[in-house]
Picture 1 (tube, one colour):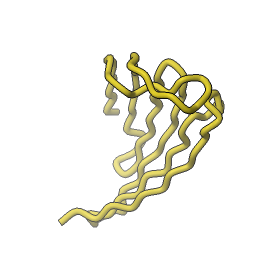
Picture 2: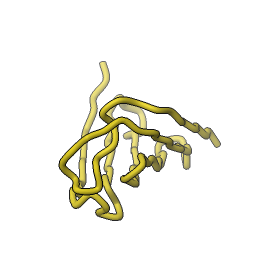
Picture 3: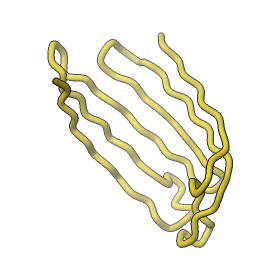
Length: 88
C-alpha cells in the first residue's frame, strides 16, 4: 500500500481565521493508495483541514478527484472541488 507524507512551510498558503487574509505558514499532508485505482488524502495548514479522493478509470488515462476544502469551516470558506483529467 503506497503511502506519502508531506510537511513544509510556505508563503501565502494559510488563510487567516477570518477567511479573508492569507499569510505564511506550515502545512502537512498524508496520502494513501487504497486500491490500484483509488487513493485518499488529507492535508492541513494552520487553519484548514482538507480531504480528498482520486479515482483512475481502469485501462485508460482518465482520472477524477473529489476534494472538500476547509472541512471544519474554520475560515468560513468551505469548498468542494471536482476535477477530471485526461492524460495523453
